[in-house]
Length: 301
Image 1 (cartoon, rainbow, N blue to C red):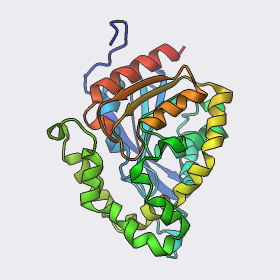
Image 2 (cartoon, rainbow, N blue to C red):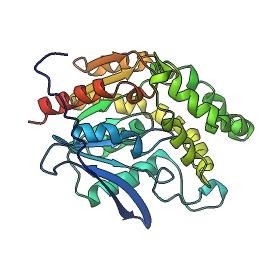
Image 3 (cartoon, helix red, strand yellow):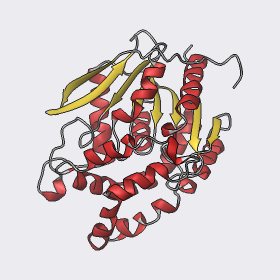
Image 4 (tube, one colour):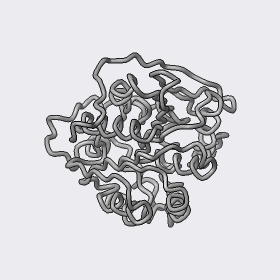
């Protein structure tokens, strides 16, 4: 790293845990740092929630206003019954984006940098298309927007999208403890560096009543993201936001090809391929915190 980079402190700045009522649902979110500082909205991925960002948020909060929500059906937010089982809530990415959009409007966060990981990319790009004026810059950490980035672990979903009823029991296997653990360990250099609390907490939330159906609905709806990739790419070409790509290059879900593809539409994107897997924050927190703090400092003006 160059000596001129902004290095985040490790001061343990306090985060605040809050809730807002959105469309009758309790939506949980974490926030920290000064509201007068540049804002970073961190959008979680499957199967986690805002807790996955707590170490990064603490590193950044001395200089950045950090916000991270739990989507409905994730973490501490309400989990209404799925419409596919007779409930009232449609677990689609459009709906997650609706709730996130209203939350950010409610708390007054409508101009920000966005950190998008995994499921966070479909939510983040929907917000960007709806409100391009909200986005100051994009940080995509294994947040895919290209067909080239659909790795081998995503390929079984093709059969699910083609015939949901026939394949759903097979796809349900991705919600198991073994699959959750494997997702954290695949592609990492040193498995002893990965805190088992990460996959244990992920599995705790997956095992809550009704969450399995919410996740199956979203995995089925992921096909709409693939269809939307060209629109997201067009948005990148048109608006040319600053883009940072701290990417776990050994990711079996969204491999390095997905990061490299961004350069077609944003040639000056800042690409950093990290020798790790899908959950790059598990073992590259220091690297990503430094890159993120420096990126925001340079583009916040």
